[in-house]
Image (tube, helix red, strand yellow):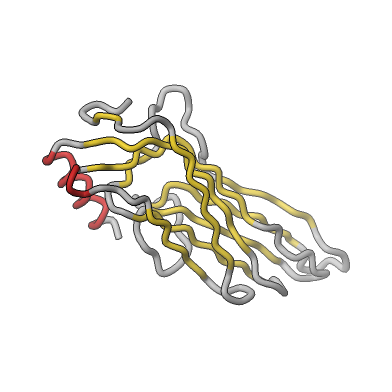
Length: 170
């Protein structure tokens, strides 16, 4: 439990998905948390599971599918050095120069906090955002997320600081 916040729910699991509007096209989905700003309600994120669909295995072509999870809207894929990005994932196939489908690799950010952390982030505004983009693929790719956390009430000062910090990070 985070200091200064009062939990108003038990653990909630939220699923979300986004599919590219066309192959290799950045696409973003907004997922509404239905928070109550009149009660200074926030969502405390305890863990995120972020998966992407496999990139196409094309002979001689490097392909990848990448996704990011953020607290604010982005105009491109997020990276972990951005304060509003909580998770990233990528599946990559390196095949350039090969006559076969190449070799696959997977990268992910921390999905579940280490034992010493109570949470990995707090969402103070009403939405979170899921982004996906492929590279070198023949068909559109998708990303799915499962977010674990709980609703909590913040004091007026905490809530104002959290919202301002979140909005200024965009």
